[in-house]
Length: 452
Image (cartoon, rainbow, N blue to C red; front, side, top):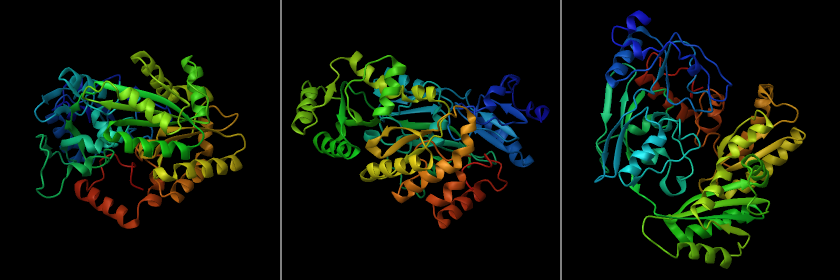
């Protein structure tokens, strides 16, 4: 195969040392590929896909390889890593838009927007290595969904190479376009099963010049939900982030970060207001709001360093929990009004089924999505996955009872595909299959992922 590919790919696009790309970041899956390629131009992606389509060779697209569901691990065929498609093509301040290659690292998009006096709001723990194409393919969420929405809400246009090598490109920064089906939404969240995202035009916003941050202790999740409702009524769009953190998660992070816990409480909320217009008393308004509504167990950041320290406690939870060993992770969402019900019922069920299980709960209460990670006692390595189906049965049953979803922002990949029929109807899954069959009749695009 390599000899044939060198007819249209340069030697620099076929790395000899790309074997590390075969293993996912959690080191749970290690796949194999007949060849690993890193095209440097969209035209080379098109030629590659046309060849693979004609030859019926499977293709696994891969961005920064930061996924948590095994969606970018190949099972033979071609591993198509997009990291060399990494140009910022254009910044259009008039339209508040930036056009980039799909392999551009998220942090670089944030920095390019900032250099132009604008703000790109997607913010993830992996932003220093994840890539825009992967963010789009999994419909990433992150810390600012409450105000700015998920990746689906941030994409103005896409450039996609179809499985047969044809190009669909709509990168013009149009804010309105009602000429038929909006095809970009087929590819957002498709996890590389319908085509190769090679470029995107993304929305930019005014830079926030004021940030007021509070860490609030609450007695229950119900009280946190009440705080969220009150804050949305009082501050509307200024409420950018609203994170829920369990006491156990905070203790882990504080020990890992070598920091003091800001306050004592069973549950914690990290909330942030932002404004792009000078508002000198926004911090006073936040403090007054908390006091007036009985949330006096709170700390407000009085400087950027204090704000950064509060956010560090939130962002270090993922790293801190590794000290407990390998976890069975859950990226779930339920209606906000039912978060407390889910946490209570699921926790009780898990503790009944698995004695001394440890549960780390944290996440984006502002949109109802939680990172719900479980650790079994005395098992700190990958042997924990022997119990994954049993743990998932408990967790996902409780999620579904609360009308939630098993994948909020990380996707389905290969880990969760057998659960898809529990959250999507037979009609919906058949429609998905029909769309894939039309675009990918030979099932060469990321086979074995997403669809059961």
